[in-house]
Length: 166
Image (cartoon, rainbow, N blue to C red; front, side, top):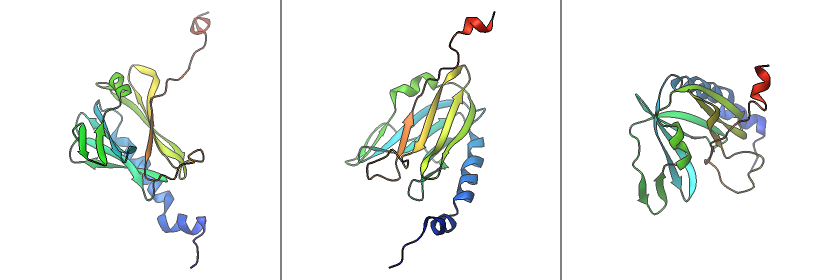
């Protein structure tokens, strides 16, 4: 059986077109208020992130084998709790500080096979964001695919803010 090269796989899956669709889909976020976030856990790992905005619910999930992410409309925001023995719906406690805030930017980060994802920035929170990326990255030594990593980073933007006033 012949194996497929990385270049052949890239052409077959059309990564550039998928990345363009992802970037285009990010336009749905700015200007909308985040009202809720849910994360679907599949076998204990982060599988999908549901973001309820003031006018719709979007799901961020793996595309192909998780090397890229995609944004899709979700028909409903799942309820928190146990769906079945392998699936749970959870809300990360870190998201509470963002609820009710308007998203001012949705930036694409990473690339296919290297932590592809989105960073959401919020009005009134210039040093805090929500970062959702694919688990497909060089530092992932586990054999998992189609999963997410979600972070709530705090950024250092000023070391001595009073110096700027001098």
